[in-house]
Length: 281
Image (cartoon, rainbow, N blue to C red; front, side, top):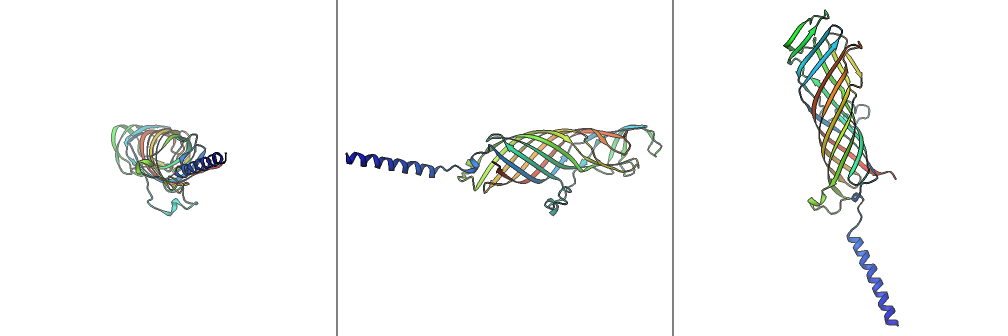
């Protein structure tokens, strides 16, 4: 009887030891699951734009600047990205998201891009102007220099794409033989989004008073791919490639409510962000 009791006790102790050893070998990392976590990110961007036909309408004029060339307005590596009073001056990105499952998240964000017409370019103009301001005439795809007296045109405060996204996330740390993902984790993600354009368009048209006010001007759709490096469980650096289509059919150009512009174009954005991932509950 005594030997049987000792044998049972020995088996119990061995079983507990075996399970404890197994738990030590396979710990549950914080980074193993994403569901229920929030993330917040801030960064900067560069972008490229396709050429665009921009149509200007108002009292006594209606014309299109064809294949307008435009570019972004980078500030480079600058302290303004971290200065709370000036951080909206550079080209920036903000995003706040929530993981609805380990692999999928929903988020809202603001892509603060800048769009500047290339000044003094020669572009074909098609339409008519009859305003008595020195540019009157019938234009039939007429090559015209975009002088400052004729037109300055930019969305520089900025080309604000306010959007929502759905994204998928996958941990690829095993490809790099990373064991403890709480120390460092490598993820890839892909997402699609849609939203509205809320630019502050800076325009001076045919010598009229410069206009520079916020206005909901259209909509956009986008898709992205990203590489994310998370370290110390809670912090990450992320690089993104993002492209999309923008349709701005109601752009304010002067303080006269009848003056409007419209355009559509594609864009390609390169983004570097820093962020944090955390649980609230």
